Image 1: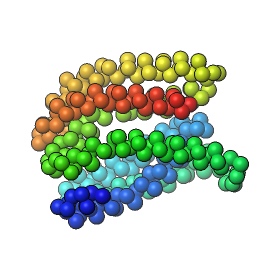
Image 2: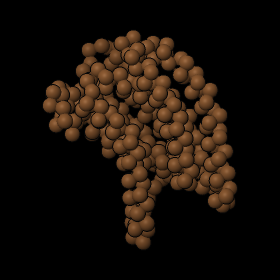
Image 3: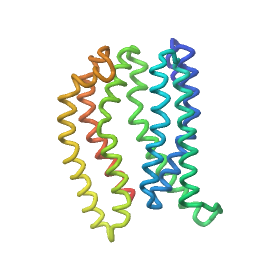
Image 4: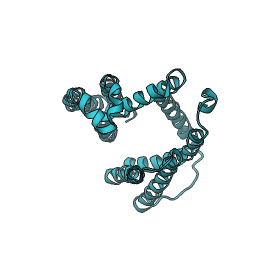
Length: 250
């Protein structure tokens, strides 16, 4: 859509975006493998899959950054390659731990498809909520302002690891509860824990942001500080929403 919405978009950037789309099925399959491991109780393997995917991505990025002559297309190629390697690793973990055998259960198919459709719609609306802002801004703002906002979004993601970890733990805990009442107490305990752990991080992030953001991203992004401080607060609510969502799923 972006090349049509932005006629002035460079051809190289358009081609890089199309290339990155090749990573989508790789990411979906890798995530599917990760959740199979999590559902079977192999939390260490689940964490290993997540960690390896990040390492495979960060390593070439750092190499390209030090190289200094990489193009947008080269970065896109590195991203696709990292997702392919992460998929291979996750598949190896699934085969080693679960040793799956495939067969078609037609009686189970309608319920699986119905659950999958609900999950799909939830995922689409969640992604739209996370990405629609940048799509709209790419139309009405200059690339400079959009770049400042993207950096502010990245800097505000300090809560992501914390709440993702809580969500991973709360899902099996609520599933294993003896009844809905106990599951509600489990959920409340993890929500309270999330607030207690994130509140000091929130205050510290807001205080440190005017100094830390320019140090990490460069002085050119000083104007993104106030937006990042606002989005840090939004990240707290977004993280709590993730924990609640996994609790309801459990």
